[in-house]
Length: 365
Image (cartoon, rainbow, N blue to C red; front, side):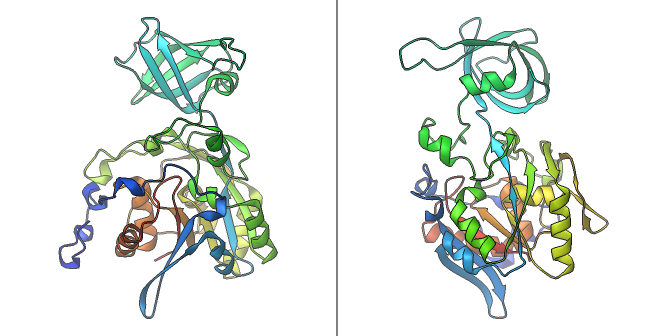
């Protein structure tokens, strides 16, 4: 990133992808979680009369960052075993990452293979070999069509059964090891409830049951939304002009209890704190006439600098990929220069980045 304000490209009227790139040493990309959920570092970022304040600490410092009556909004989606490996009839290897279920036996997927398959192509997926050496079952699917980057597959068995028997934890592409028992537990929040995500809402990975209980005892209100994170979260922004980027659609829902809790807190002047960018997108997608509305739907909300936030006051989030839509969202939330300075500080202080990395607590600009 260029840090000279006089030549800051982020002041351009039309945001460009290149303005959100920065150099990140590979060794700062976390390959494993901290030993405990609360073991990660926390960078608290805010501005006051003296200017930008960057406070280094750890996740337990969150206990002192909330006031009674604040509302902490979590995303209770549950990550499914969304990656399948198999082969075509020709023997060519196939790897798929579920984007979403269309019906009990149909799904839209990202598909990796040497040659894109045509409609009608049969695929086979294999469950792991059992402990006694017995081969696992083989599951079949047929390519039924294509929608842009996504292929539609029809499975011969219920999709839930296939994923549970043959699927893998869908670790992000920048995590280089194969999924292990540690990942099955730690790449999931402690409050995960509704199956459907193909990537974890990673800011929530830092919250333990004990920490949540301590926050509630302090008077913090917990509320939940559900946003099923899709495979599109791993897709790069290819368009240089961000107005041309098309966000993948993601399913979300806001319970009536959450809408009531958030609206009452806002009326009383209490703060709404979102855990993760996914919670932000669910909340900000559900505002009607200045109030949070209960309901469910699909969102393609692409949050860029200049976006007017109507619900969220503070954001707990991880450190995001260069050029990603998530980095653009936090820049919109806290201010581009604030995020620029915070990320520069994080690199200098060797914070750990991405899904298994450290966290930051941001104030809305």
